[in-house]
Length: 105
Image (cartoon, rainbow, N blue to C red; front, side):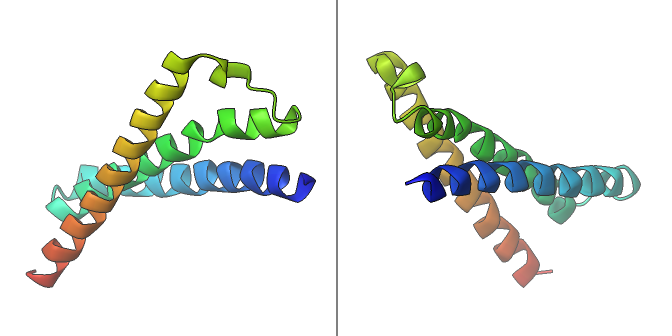
């Protein structure tokens, strides 16, 4: 039971820290060369950081014996689901766009 709680928290922590490092690197590269792939990498890192942060309330609910916490409200649940879906779809779209961009460059 606790392995899942730890896994969600560790994954979110590693995801935020790793993507923050990558965002810093690609942001510094963006200052030197302003091209589409570098901009896409910056956007992908930003979206991935937001995705990882969006899972922190889930980890919080898991650490408190699955008490709803923020998810006690139907409005919060709806907003969280829409936000999570949009973040995931935008992330997939940006990776697809990066792949197409690299294919033709």
